[in-house]
Length: 273
Image 1 (tube, rainbow, N blue to C red):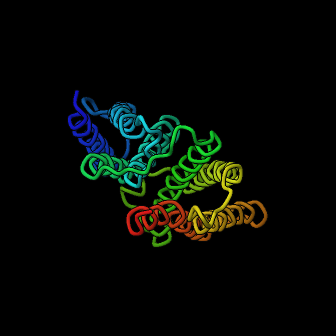
Image 2: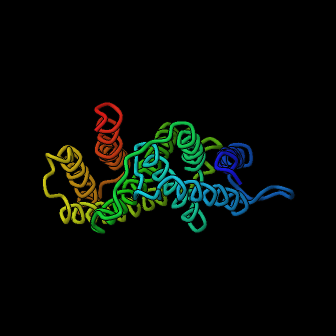
């Protein structure tokens, strides 16, 4: 099966999964009741098939004879793939599948971009294992904290409707507010641990951050770490929740977005380094 055919099928399945989740939420109240209707697990399986095909594409794009091709578009595709995988696996046991309505079509768009706009920024095979571990930890951290940001946005919508005493069908289909907040902090906690590992592994191979144009990325990543660590401390010490938790989560994600995607965009696309 050709690269383009796999990409087309993966994209279609990503969008199909997002649409099925949207239909399940808005038309059927987020339940699996009723004969002839696809259950949540059936929809997740369709999404996982898309993830599997996406993984095949990534293998072909990332692993080249010269080393690891981690160009800008490939990095976006890898991050969205991991977000989709983590989200779908988590949805098997937690009520987070509705995040896929937005996040899964984004993964589909990343697949298209990977095929239409191939990018090259190859790390030689001889480069240190610490570098590869750093990249892995960075992508894992960014992916999980991206899902947390999506959860925070959903929580903000839910909180606004409940404050205005307008818990419509969409809001009634969501888990209770306390459950949503618990899931949010669980994701942030694990994401912070991965971000910590990313920063630690980075110190093992970065000899001259200025020469490698990495100083801004490192500083922004550290700022994001401080934001998320402060949020978890505030939750433990002062019981932060609701709008406070949402603001801190989204602020940390924006900083992390600038660190990972923004810096890569500037270095590879704008400066061409």
